[in-house]
Length: 115
Picture 1 (spheres, rainbow, N blue to C red):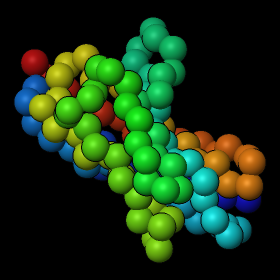
Picture 2: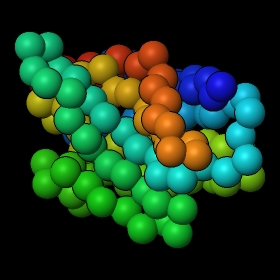
Picture 3: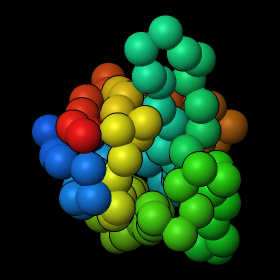
Picture 4: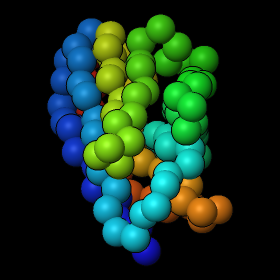
């Protein structure tokens, strides 16, 4: 079993920055893809960014150039650096990892961007 703990969410003004972290613990030999999803009120959960074991990255168009995903394999941790935040980035952000073909989710961290 794998446990994920997210941190770094909060309230920020538009144009500000936040850095999310997600640490994985438990029975882990290696982690495959790691990613961040978000769900805004009344909307479906969407993929924000993903990073592979080879550190290739992919982003949803709305965050390209503003968000950066990275990972520290020694710490089993994935990060999401969010710059130039906009009110439409307000959502609960969820960490997601694949371990030996299984997907695991964190409980989410709330990001609120005020205008």
